[in-house]
Image: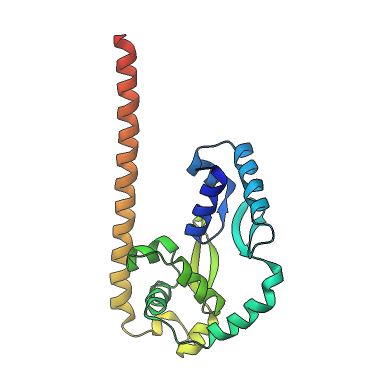
Length: 204
């Protein structure tokens, strides 16, 4: 499959901005090759409902400016809808942790939350912020409008706060430990491959 189509699939799956450096790392290509594929993708999206947006080094999908009126109407309709079970699950994680990454939310829920997060952001219930500990990540936080709607001044006033946050913290801690183990296994595998290649070279 061509690189531009792979980029399209990854951006669609990710559902949030990605840096050029990250895309280069994923596809193991030089920046010039990536930019060429991005230009091809941007050209293929001309006169379509979806556009490729660039903000500095970051790339993301957006909607065509020509459809702004349509989306204003859809947004009003969306805001007036009742929250689905999936939306409530996602909001609960964000609320009780007072900010969570998409990876944490996905891990707790067990499914991809990209579209749910997008819908909640459109409704003004959550907002995205740069992770202060890692500028490559985004943190989803509750908005003041959401807290006002729930009638609480802070997340600590939420029902069963201490018990719930303890469970969530244990769950996300487990995710971090699994990520570390996965990374260690990958590094060990690479080290073994390099060792085998070196040993093979010595015996020839």
